Length: 358
Image (tube, rainbow, N blue to C red; front, side, top):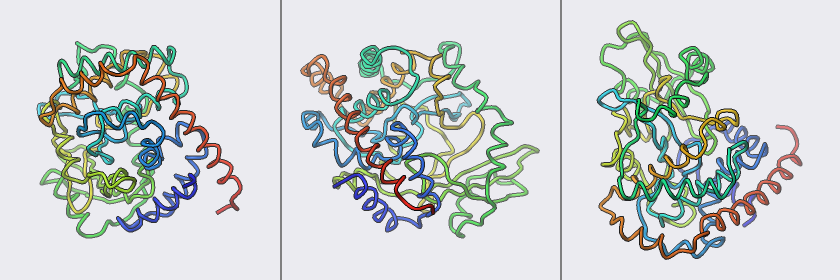
């Protein structure tokens, strides 16, 4: 299948899973034509279908609950039940049971594609793997506190300020959700919330085209916000009939080595979460990334390992597999996938630019 055929086939499949926002898909197509990194973010389904052919040697690794879409911008912050500020994987839409190597490979490939990251590719890979081994030895959540002062930069960016958050909400188009989704959103708001309003928007990259409804209201004098995003089976199910569904999403998001978001829920066929300036996905700009260096990539490796071993997975089996692989396995395979992604991107860009204006 060419990349254009895979896009069409995946989107036809998506239309059978949920009511698709066609304007969102058009926005996604435009985003995919901008640069290779955005293309990669938006096409997890293509990665899922091609990875077994591109790097067959990784398919025999121990299978674990995987994020499935572990790119560098799939991390964010939230408050746990104790009010602690937590940093970790933000989105489990593509969760599936896969070789653990696939999460590491997707993260490493995204690092190669992302613009402006400090250090060499070799140094970045070392940071990811060192963090991953540390996470196997000591799986744990990551809190933004005085023990991780460098993480303060992640939550003190202009995009995370209250004013920027309200400006984003101002972009909401007023739209009434289907009754069951409206009720689910109401149920997730505090019981005496007043002035409840609904809207819709299109955000992200890979999830563009899925309905996303937002409820806002006033509780005890302050703004409260919830979002409902349509939940569909993992792209890995489309690509290779790999298990991935809402139960796996919640199990992984609340697994024992995480400090989970108490507001995360699955209702009415949607993933519902709290939105706030301190409860958002962190999209790293090139300028931001220069401040973080290998500490950020190492922390991502820790988080992936903590997710992989949470479901009674024996970390020794993963360690043995890691030790048996060539020293440069991740650098080499990520380079192969990067080259394939850049080729796909150029083909998609030429196709998109050849189309008449919508």
